[in-house]
Image (cartoon, rainbow, N blue to C red; front, side, top):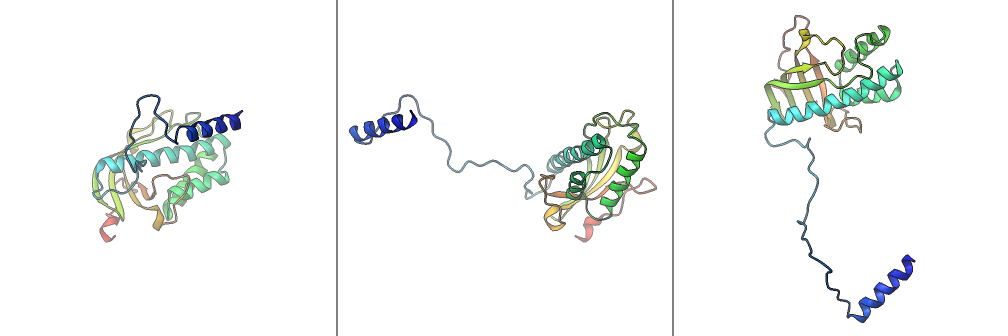
Length: 195
């Protein structure tokens, strides 16, 4: 049937001199329309951009956490997701937290957990090679009883392409090299100053 329709259309076009009149109004599409990457690094890295990246990272961390909570183990895909999000010693810190939570039976976790929500409080340093910010973090999507005790934290983000973090599991192309607070609950020294 489709072949017959195609032959009929070709015959009509040949008989009409190859021209056809539109049957209704036509629209003109802009040339070169593309989808914008929300994580493409802008000329000036501002709070709005960092918040967009943090929301993407929160979603990716949530996906990894749901795998771990659902399986009560750290399956290979969760490890791959962890590698896509954290570099350096921060990756091991996160792995230690997850192992402890598995041993504790995820007693304070919602089933299934949602996402943490991280927002910039103060953008301390922001350049294409490094972002350092004080953040406010809300764990109410994850924890049954979320404490305000760890609400203020600090994050340091580095470009994933320079740190082996490029992955389908992290759409932001930024990775955590620091995520939390010091033992005395203070900020770390600015690691972006030397980058």
